[in-house]
Amino acid sequence: MAPAPWDAVPPEDTLFALVTGANSGIGFAICQRLIDEYLTTRSLTSHLVVIPTTRSIRKSQETIDALRQHARQFAATSDILRSRAGPNYDPRSVTKRIHILSVQLDLCNLADVHRAAEQLVNGTVSSPADANDVYFTSLTDVRIPRLDSVIFNAGMGGWTGLDWPKVFHNIFTKGLVQATTWPTFKAATAGHVVNPLPDVTDKKVPEMGQVFCANVFGHYLLAHKLVPLLSRRSESDASIPPGRIIWESSIEPGWKHLSLSDFQAIKTNAAYESTKRLTDVLSLTATLPSARPFVNSYLQPATKSASPATPPRIYLVHPGIVQTTLFPLNAFMFFWYRVVLYIARWLGSPWHPITGYNGAVAPVWLALQEQEALDAVDAEHVKWGSGTDWWGECRVLKTEVEGWGWDGTVGTRKELKNEKGERGIGRKIKGRKSGAVDVTEEKRVEFEMLGVECWREMERLRGEWEARLGRMLETK
Image (cartoon, rainbow, N blue to C red; front, side, top):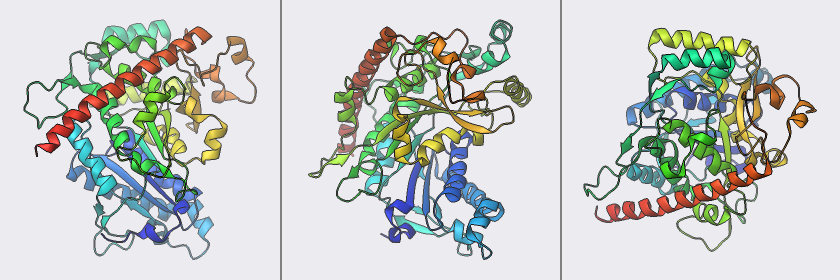
């Protein structure tokens, strides 16, 4: 095992972040923004380790190369970095502190999830650089000592295109801003399933909802297996805050999208929205006493240690409305959809970042923010969203969740209208869904009970599939 450049650096001057689905779209933009904001806000000796996951070795190498190119360009052109370092500034002193590693991960293959987690927890990772590369350090068989943030960005939509009659109906009945923020015109079909253990030929192995597996369960299992890297031992990690599990949701889902009778979103035509509603419910109820028995089991390392550990924290985020290739559009429609999104922003929507880099502001904020600052705003009970003003200036905003409100507290419309301390897009009422209902104590209790049932079912599924996975690994 080779020594790593960060081994000689104090733990508080390093940050290790894993981002799933990071070879393109929002995931790639999160990695870019992590690099930029870390370099401009941390000490000039701090090291950042970014671990983007992709589904193939080729994509991993392409992603590493592209992120290194981004880091080189940012280091060479950033006025902030140049002013902080002084007249003798050398961009190479910056890029040498950025380390891009990658692992391959197929979230719809639970054996692959296990393999990737084992590589990170108990194995090594490599990221060779060209012998003539003076900007980056070649890394061979290095260990990852911990993870500070894992950002669960990867996923699939399951859409087939646009339902044109609904497009026009949405626009004419709700207006352009509401129609493009909470659309109901995305066409999709039900019945998408996958074999999450493709190497097992036993016909008794049940199938799983494909969108559910990609968006929720694969990540859920991965996080559990990464708990050893996300937990903190009190005697040795006193200077490091707990690891952060950052679930990426969507602004769209509501009550109607999640049904306990179709938990894996197989029968519904809105599988994406169902899985994102499930993500919201799981994340926001994770600290509630009623859910703690299941959450404690989930955040318990598979191999127990004699010394007590501080478990990771769970946070929830969404990127706003971002144009990506996740939704299937031809080139002509892709262009005009972008135009429509800009018009929606200019009409006053705070939820249209549009570009992946702008949409990455909230996930990166959660990954880099000081723990004391997050605790001060009760960040675990909020769905944080990426927002922009008319000019495209980015902000991190609280997002209303049906049955939960903005932070799990009961409020009234009068209190919203009289909100103090915020202006413009920062006002909650500014980006509210048309027809939204104020959360009541009854709805808040119903949301919590739904969270308990969801945690119970997720833990049941985890136990069931880990047992199958264990039997498979024993036979190999």
